[in-house]
Length: 96
Image (cartoon, rainbow, N blue to C red):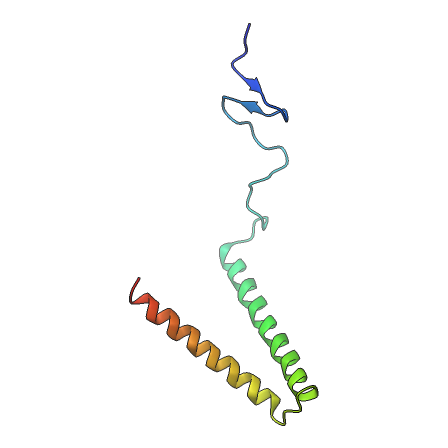
């Protein structure tokens, strides 16, 4: 007699309802973490990363390039880049 299920090469059942995954693959990571908490953690991570990048670039400009006002240069460059990105997003939002 033929079974209604056919066993595939790797032992999975083909042709029928898929069984639950015993390893939990496909479940949401974060184990009970709310979306608001994830957003706060993400914003915190980006903020800390920006501080670290700013500090390291300031030190590089000061030590290796000999800039007198390295922090002001880095902050100005980041503000200009942020304004350009916001301008680009606003420009393309009108055509989307």
